[in-house]
Image 1 (cartoon, helix red, strand yellow):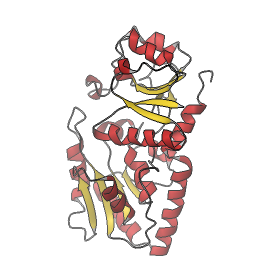
Image 2 (tube, one colour):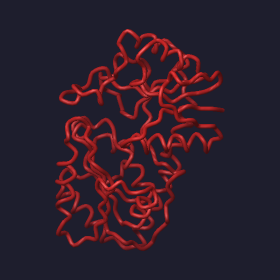
Image 3 (tube, one colour):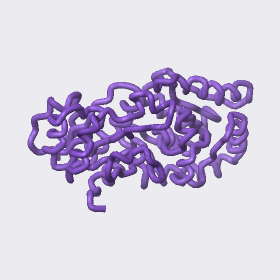
Length: 304
């Protein structure tokens, strides 16, 4: 009942894998963060690893020694310009890829919906497991009165192309003279508690994606799930995969449309708004928590 999880001290990975660690612990596992695969000398364990760690046969051996290994994989090729940066492509030496593919105890996964793409063709049997809501470290405050009409929590960590800053500014600038009560925390490094309170005490939460997500539409960020889990109402920029995850979500094709959608929601009566929030929060808690994602991982097999 022990699982090793790759430590991610920075950016989005910090919060994603903190959520996974807490989820494993909630299910009764001893969850241990690791920095280097070579440091693991255990004999009875499962492991959540990332393909960027795989540089040699010795690293693969650590996965092979596990009873079950869940390996997050990146594609070997990716559309340009993003495919020219190591953030977007696998760093596993290509001669090691077949060995990983042939190991029955390694379950490859990605939060990218790869159906209909050719980006992951070098990998066999990659399972689509979206990101999720961290229900162990965040708690909905069940508000029926609000400090803010609209909120946004996020940053513009450089993905190698410094695109996110302009996108965020373009979308949030239209709210400047809107008359709405705005709670925007951009690049502020706020605490879990502050983020929890801001999202829970807002009528609407906004979501803004990276340029590659707009272009390809094959993955969304953790903010999607966190916003629906805490705020309960989300207005997002338009990313194709969101429609399959949440058919009733409000998707804006421009900053102006995002503002208009937000205004319309803020005009809903408090009782109706609370009902909508409750439905969305229940959906997140039943289907889209990291606990549910871990259960999915535990159910995987390499025969399907």
